Length: 271
Image (tube, rainbow, N blue to C red; front, top):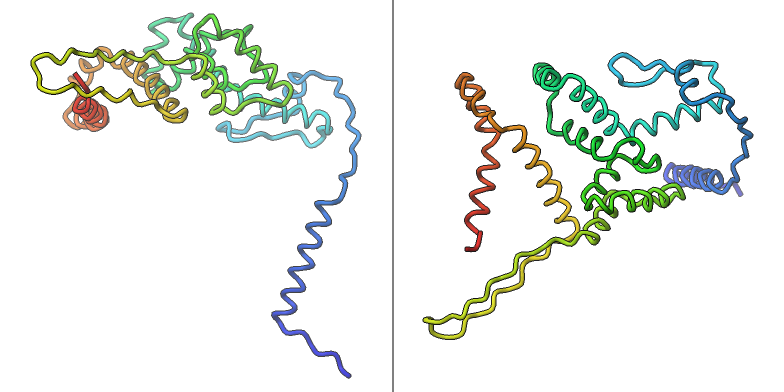
């Protein structure tokens, strides 16, 4: 009896099964161990001789004759750059400010580089100098720990740094929650009045709202940004006031959300 030919649908099903089987086999296969020689050169030497940073800093060109051990060193170097670039920017800003003072600030303004984010990097770099930084922690980790009182910063840096070296680094969100627990917010006590002169018993006021960890993180981040914005905008209206009407309108549109936010909070504020 002749074997029935498979339909197109059946052939597709067989093909899909073969692909799944091949993928599972690849997953189950034990990877072959690769012997990697120990590099005899420092990371700085390898980067100097093997790496060319492309125009516009958008990538790397690595020499074709780079051995595997030095290729891995370059990978470590690139990863470290991404984790700590905030400190590098901050160190560059602090160097310029220390060496040239107001002249450097004026130069930054002329080139359009004076952004609040940059000054946030500079502040973190000032507060945590090189000797206090933990290699295993990212810049974001360090900046979260800066929320602590000064007396606790080094202790927590070392503690979390030791965890990271063992491969147990917390996420930025987890670390933020830990910091919040270590620094509970002081809350204003509600003044209870006697209620004299009023009929009936005064109803007790509900307890103040307790933000979630994520909400408190947003509040802290916004507070930091507002502080930087206030610092940067002191006396700025005198400059904006001399600009043409088109630029004045652009600045007004830019700050309008802050005015709306102020008015909205003022409406719900208790007295």
